[in-house]
Image (cartoon, rainbow, N blue to C red):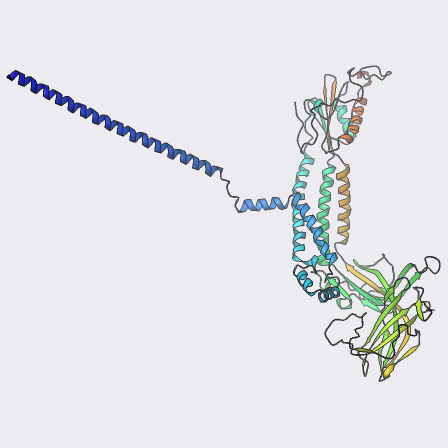
Amino acid sequence: MSAPDDLASAVHDETVRDETVHDETVHDETVHDETVHDETVHDETVHDETAVEARQKETRERARPAGLGPVGWMRWAWRTLTSMRTALILLFLFALGSVPGSIYPQRGVDPSRVAEYFKDNPTQAKWLDRFWLFDVFSSPWFAAIYLLLFISLAGCVFPRALTHLKEIRRRPPAAPRNLLRLPHSEAFEGGLTLEQAAAALRRRRFRVVTGDGWVSAEKGYLRETGNLLFHVALLALLFAIGAGGLFGYRGNVLVVEGDGFSNAVAAYDRFMPGSRVTAESLEPFSFTLKDFQASYVAAGEKQGQPLDYLAKLSVQDSPTSRPRDVDLKVNDPLDVNGTLTYLIGHGYAPTFRVTDGKGQVAYDGPVPCLADDQATYTSECVIKVPDAQPTQLGFLVRFLPTTVPNGNAWVSVFPGAANPTVQIFPFGGDLGLKSGQPQSVYQLDTTNLKPLGTMSAQPTPLNVGETKELADGAGKIQFTGVKEWISLQITYDPGREPALLAAAAAVIGLVLSLTIRRRRVWVRVKDGKVTVGGLTRTEGGGAAFAEEFAQIVTALRGDQPAHDQGGDPSTGDRGGEPDEPAGTGHVAPDAPTGNAAPGARPDEE
């Protein structure tokens, strides 16, 4: 090979080598660029996915409800408590909670019956007592219902009262543009002016406001006033009852003719004070029962029926005041500075003198008897003589006011004491007064007693002044006379008169809320055409308002000047539209119902 050929071959190889290197460099750069592009795309994809996830997380966080917090929960609890539904539920629970108080005996009324219930049903009574069913009206759960009801009613009534005050002060709304779309509407032509329309509506006791070509009138606010009065009166009634329970008291006492009573805690047979009553808060009056008179029908089909009861009292209003005579009758109580004394019952109290076996007078006085037969006042009494010697004495006594023989028996035929006698059943032994067990003065426990002598179902009765000798030298008993006793209930209730006033106000408010309707009337006058529209705000009051609306339209027609009314007055033609008969209002098919919320205005179309 020649030198030129070698030179050319070397140049060619160098050129090929340079191109190869260039191609490899370009390939490497391309691969690098593609790699960088892929990495960039991957980074952008990851970034986009991260942004989407962040937005989704933010959306979920926004959608999650925020917590109420303490203030929110307190607001929710207050709104729930003061809702009308809660008030009705509490009122139902209040009535339902009072039922056990009439089923089971109450300690505050008759503790002896509660003790007897425990004796007869110990297991059941124990469980009932755990739920305060023997002290219903002083139980914590009944007090909770009472207080919650009071708070619920107060929270309901007072905001409504403020809203009602604002509503009363607000002017009636402006007249809608198209009065013919209202449930009650009518149009006629005439010379009626706005002043005449306003005057006619004021005469009907509407609240009237006038505007540019229209008159707006409204009345019936006493409906909501009556509703609020009813609820406020109910609150006042609850408050009065609560005040009477706290600061009042009541008690029962039995007084025999010739005996007296002083208004002190120790003088009561049963005393039920309020939680805020002390011995010093009792009114310091006293009285003496001078005589008791009961009159009955003497003959005929109604023989023995009572006619009248009269207790003659000598009353001292205070220890330093002079006595005054008072005739106490049923439903005509004695009133001493708000403390009332009622006559609620009466009976006989025969008097006896008991002489024991040692010749000592162990008992001398009256014994109140309980009537066993209300028609004839046949009564039963118990005499306990614990001081008799050498053994204690007890007597069962049957008192017959008007005694007549009936074969081998004796019966009473009249409630009056025309021929009083007693039948005596004597016992001797241990009366059990030292056992610690409570005993009724009207019952004789004969467990540790034995009959004195031979017992008979119908012993010979004793007349006044006669004496019965007791067997085994136990002594004797003499029937010395007959007195009568009265049972009284003495009450002091500072909430009595407020409760009466509240009840009367509740009745008045209920009547107002049921009889008065809220209604609005608008009148538009334009170019001699008069359009009248009416709307009742009370559900179901449309029929009653239709008649009133017709009267209003008639009155507005009558206020027009006679020469401005179209037609001939002598023929009765009112000159209105010929297709519309007189007295017929236009009612649109899509007229509103009239049950709009307070303050709402009809569609101004």
